[in-house]
Image (cartoon, rainbow, N blue to C red; front, side, top):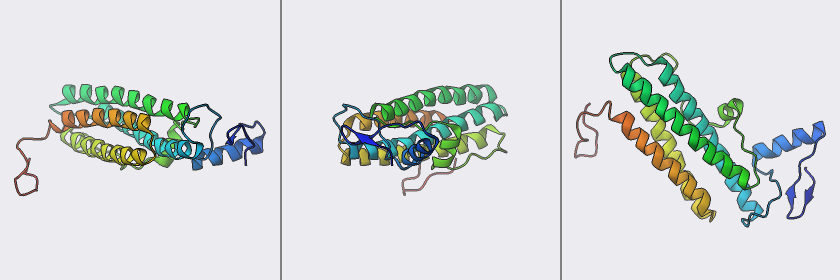
Length: 201
């Protein structure tokens, strides 16, 4: 275990064995730097773990947007190529918001590609897509999936009594919903049916 001081939160160590233990604690969401942030250490640990999960999802979402941007083909190429890049840029801002909140709480933002790949809960993006229709369908699905995970996080953060982190995920969720609207507009042709199903597009 990492040695503890002050408010009982672990302090970093520099030995090889210490680094390994710190990495394990960080992965478990139990590693915190000492801070005067008034949230209890146990609450901060839970919030950090939750936000690192959403950080991984968001980094994964960002890479999927770029995958679509690079590979889209067809009559809507220019419009979708630009749209997917706009979403990529916006998602980068969401990544920063989440990561910086983690660090504010004394946690470690686990933002590497490998960490995101290990943690992400999003569906894997198919690498063989080419048409605009295929990319619109795939990216709208993953945007909706991320939005759902963000809302689940907001509910949990409300229970943990961390309104500031709730506000961040709310901002992110609102932005993702906007991009979902922009992407879905390329495939929607008529309203959903009134019997609870979705009309054919």
